[in-house]
Image (cartoon, helix red, strand yellow):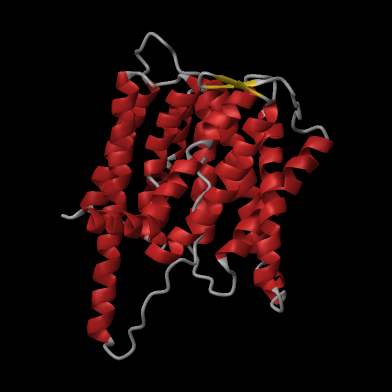
Length: 341
């Protein structure tokens, strides 16, 4: 292959939805490292989340207002969705994740949160009393086995039990987030949902901090990122701009290009990026048994997603056979990327 063709292919890949989705996962994966560098200098998890959400909301609210121009009724029609998304999917999920990061390594905390798809399978099984398909069941069992290895219960270094509970709480919030955003809603643009959720999340964090239910401790001490000692605002800007604004915007672009299901599938690479960033910026690396458990968790989630995609194709094929003249293309990109980290 000639050099010009190779360059053209590279540009095409970066401009494609897949390249954007990988970029989104990479910047989302920095959140745990930036947050932990702040927590180690005296920031409380609540303060870190509040500053992150506030900064991102101030930036994203401007393009959201432009999108909403002349269509303000969309806020009134979808106020409950935005409220639940911001309160649970944004504020709750990130607060619990940051509390987990304060007690666990970034990789372990994120792996616990990524048990959300398995929790969804188990919940749907209980609610519908219908046994999942074989591939989904295998994926759930594989992930649960990976969880046992990630916790490394027989290892010399004990995993903080409270940190595990925080990580599982973040997973529960992520489950609720998926249920909220999985509902098809063509009247609410993804950018408006994301910015509205950030505004609600930021207001929630400041409110519970003001009434004294959540410690709000800030610090101006220098932070450590890799071999560098940097001013505190470097970690704050990284958390706000890279890990939130760019991550959300690129995630929305990827979802619109690839479709929500494929984009969420690619977002699994966030776990790998988070481990890599934690190693480079914090010197953290899970033990070998935990890395193996992480691979099992990711592998199990991949099996669940593959089975889900197969089920969607079968359902679409069945609809096409039953009503060949009524089948319309399924709209994609109406779900913003999940704020896992």
